[in-house]
Each structure stands twice: as C-alpha cells, then as structure tokens.
Length: 238
View 1 (cartoon, rainbow, N blue to C red):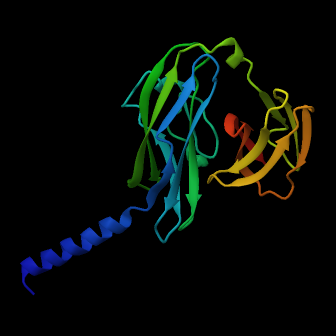
View 2: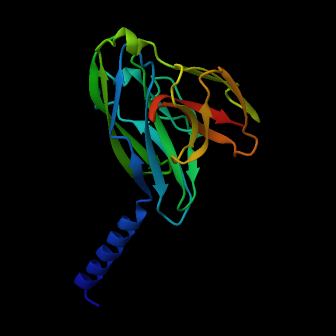
C-alpha cells in the first residue's frame, strides 16, 4: 500500500468519525417571541434537542454573550432549573444526560420588567456535550418586546394562579375570566404534548385537580380564552 493511499484511507476514516461525532440536533424551536412591555413580565421561548447518537450524552446549555443585545441582561436560561439572568451557562451539577434517541427542552426567558420600553433583538445559545464541547448545536431566538400601551379594555385581562408549585398530587386553580368566555385550562409537557385539559366555568373561580397519575417533571400550564393562549407559565410536579 502506498503512502498516498494510506493517507487517503486515514482521511476518509477521520471524515466518517467527524460526521458521527455530532450527537445533538434541534428538532423544534421558537424562532420569534413577541410580547408587550406594559403587561408581559415574562416571555418564554423553547428549543427541543434530541440525542441522535447511540450513546448517552451529558449536555450543558450556554448563552453566547459575545453577541450582546439590549435584551441579554434580561435573559434567563433554564436547563433543569431556571437561573438568574447573570448566569450564561448552567452549573455542572445541572447538566442533563440525554439517552440515545431521547429529547430534552431548553427554556429561555426574557423579562421586559413592565417598563413600556421597546426592545428587539436576538440571542444565540448552544447545547453541547460537556465532555466534548465541539459536539454541539447552536440556535438563535429573536425577541420582540413592543412598548405600545394597551387600551383600557385590553388591560382587563383574565387572571390565573395555581398552587402549590411545585405540586405533589393535587393542584388548586384560582381564576377570573369574563362571564360567558370560553375558557380552558391545559397542561403541556416539555415536548409540547397536551396531558390534561378542562373547561373553566366563568361562574366559579376555583378548581382542584388530581395530578397524582402524572409523571414527576416540568410542565407548562396555559389559560386559553376562545382558543387563544392568554397565560402560559411553568409548573413542577414532584
């Protein structure tokens, strides 16, 4: 075998190994999140990552602060836990092990602070193998926080609160919706599947639900009015 042939074979094998080394793939994400700086205290975006390799991967999440925008210092990353806005990479103890073929969800929050100021920009993030940072996948989310004040009618928004949070077996819901409104409470898991829904009677204001059959984990509860999401927040079930 000639030296040239040997080098070609080595390059070919290395090329195959390089292609196989990429374990992570974003399969679903928000690209644009829009909110109102007068009323929205928390805008949430989501990115679902899948392990496409044959081995478990210990994954970390990092915000790329080098691409700074005026929204960066209002941004909090959630990877196993939601951290303060000054943390751009999750602590090692909160790395997430993703099994082959399995998925996990990164949650990114922007807090407009209800100050009425317009802020628009993008933030870049990367999910990576903690022990092999070159094995990574990057994604970008655009945030558009407008500063247009709402009318008096729009300020009278429906209200929803749940407790306890974290919850164990039972969850108590308190709500206030306009009379005659078609209101629904929904519970969504991290991959976007609806696991529970119920109608909310506008003549009442409180409801207790048994969640003991659900698996522990992070969920999102939403209030829908006439088919449109008005409120969406995180719920932890232990």
